[in-house]
Image 1 (tube, rainbow, N blue to C red):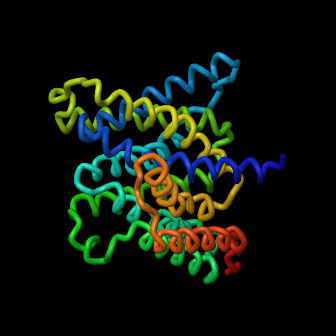
Image 2: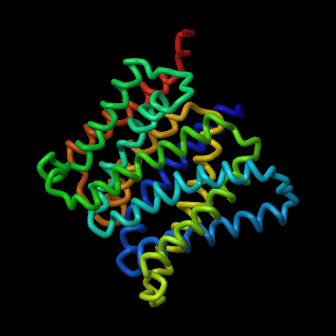
Length: 300
C-alpha cells in the first residue's frame, strides 16, 4: 500500500469519524462546562496516546524548540479550533455548526496565500471546487440564509474564529514539518491544548461551578477514542502526505456522515435534496482531488 493511499485512508477516517462528533460535543456541553469538557477530552486522549507510545518503545527525543512549535500549532488547532466549536455549540444547533465549519477548506486556502512565505497559489479550478463543496454542505443541511442570518451571533462569531484558528494551525504544521512522527506530534498537540483549555476553564470559573455527572461519561469517552485518538491522529498523518486544502475537505463530507447516521439510527428521512447535495459534495471533493496540485508562485 502506497503512502498516498494510506494518507487518503486517514483522510477518510477524518471524514467519517468527525462527522459523528458534532452531536457528541452538543450533548457534552449541555451537561458540563465547554472548555473544561474539551480539556478533559484532550488531556485524557494525549495521556493515553503518550503512554501507548512509551509502552511500544517510542523515543520522545524532541528538541525543545520543536516541542514549543508543535504545542503552538496544537493551541491553534484544538484550543482555538475545537474549543471554539465546543463553546459555540451551547448556542448553535449541530446542523448549523457543521455548515459553518464547512468553511474550513476555504479558510485554509486563504491562509496559505495570506501567510508570509506563501509558496503556492490556489488555482481558479481549486477555488471553484471549494465553493461548490461549501454550497453542497449548505444544501445538504437545508439551512437557509435567513436561518444562518438569525443564528446566535455569539456562536457564529466563535465558529468563524474557530475555522480561522484551525486553518492557521493546519498551514503552520504543514509548512514547517517538525520532524516527529504523526503520533508524537498529536500527543504534544493534545496535551498542550488540554492544558490551555484547562487554564481558560479556570479563568472562566468553570472549575468551581463543575459538578461531575454520569451523563458526561458517554460523550466524553466517545470523543476521547473516536474524535481524538482516531480522528486527530489520522488528520495529522494525512496532513503529512497530502495538500492542506485537500485534507480540509473532510469538513464537506462530515455533514453527509451526520445525515447517514441520523437515517440509520434515528429514523430520520433522507430526501431528494439531501441526495443531490451529497452528490454535489462528493463531486466537488473528487474535483479537488484532481486539481489540488500546488502551483509554484512565480519568482520575483
